[in-house]
Image (cartoon, rainbow, N blue to C red; front, side, top):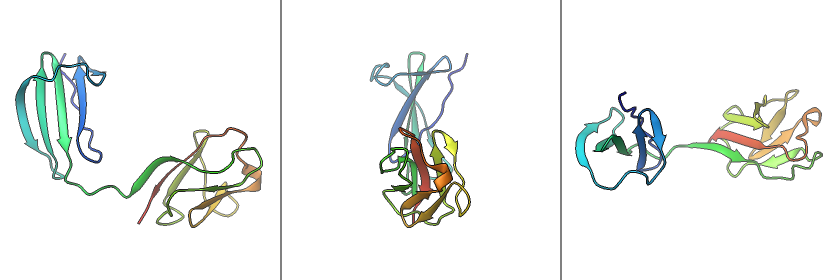
Length: 143
């Protein structure tokens, strides 16, 4: 079976090791090996592939600027079954640039829907109050 190779390219250098189709935990392969190839990727990143026995290591350094996306941020505020107001750490680029999840379910933005946004504040509809211990996560774009 051929090794699967997937690049992880997030804020600098990332290493993923694959052997027989499965991800090998970090630190499992040794640090020695022979260089197999160097490739220029279309979006301006450089990668180096190293084989260590039957394991393939990929290192990628991105030349792409830091993302303007915030992923899976936990909203701040008391999740006590009565609070409807929560905060994001940054102000979204627009009200429609937010994916908000309550216990894994995507919520709908807008008056009469699940929540509204004012600046960096999320206000849940009184018919959609997060229950005690609910997990509230947001992914959103910033300017």
